[in-house]
Length: 192
Image (cartoon, rainbow, N blue to C red; front, side):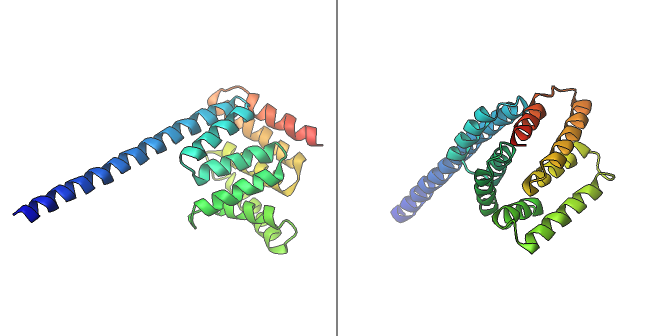
């Protein structure tokens, strides 16, 4: 009878420790998610420095592929291709073979921009994405992604056109300010 009592107590203690860890993990994930939401607001306001700080805080709490991909996007817009590539690679590692094709193609292209295979994969991704424009209700996202792909290719002029179209459609849909895309376009035109 005493053995059963010890087993029950041991099982209860194990359950409390396991449950306690799960609650702790969810709390950390929740804090990381809050940092990510604040970062998205900063990105919309065009404050990339503050957004990067918040995203890095989120990574310290709970790394995720989405956060690394977002950091990669910011660095890409700022013209820092090496940091962009590093973050895209980390995102690809973290998503553990569950990445969407976009992340894989961008990461591969940035690692091997002169490879015929990666050039062809990015070209196919662009053609596929362009074909979605007629089918999608979220055209602003498609134009944004096309801008990102052109930027990865180094075609800044086409990237700017896509970002401007995405901004126009986004503002029309959401009646928001133009600060976010204006800052991106300003950063890109400074590169030229």
